[in-house]
Image 1 (spheres, rainbow, N blue to C red):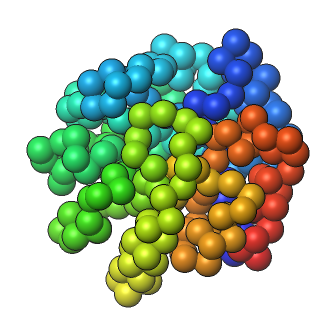
Image 2 (cartoon, rainbow, N blue to C red; image 1 turned 30 degrees about the vertical axis):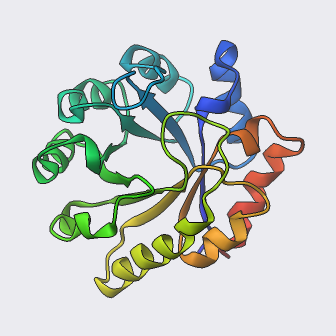
Length: 218
């Protein structure tokens, strides 16, 4: 099965986002990954629902919003109404993870949970039936261009095994420092969706990486 590629617009040219979406689509991107930051849960501030709604008009690809925000349950509706298909919340950002995931599903979107590098997979134990996606962060969230943390590979394997043992269709996404050099090891560990930003938008032959990853799981 081909591994999906979700280019992160955080590393794209913000002055021409519609063109950047078209470029990755033409090169085989499967999803569009949106990094939503609020200056609270992480220091940076990126885009909100108004921008997402404008971008929705330029693509039919699945739009995957990673909410790196405090109290994400308060923002779910505005992003799903803007056209997001999958909402991922940080496990560390909500006091009521079960309730938050149910709220995402009730909004009509797929639900995901992101785990920071130091967050153990055990936090997922009682919400597996609600998960369409688990996002294993391989950098600390808040900025693009960081280096992949190699110690995360065993964690990816652990989450992959938990998905297999439960016979779930849950996607396993990895985000942070993904590039041409480490993508094979990440895929081997069990990832089914790779998020890449700088390695696609800022590297030489970055667009070719999309096709390389697409074929790696075959």
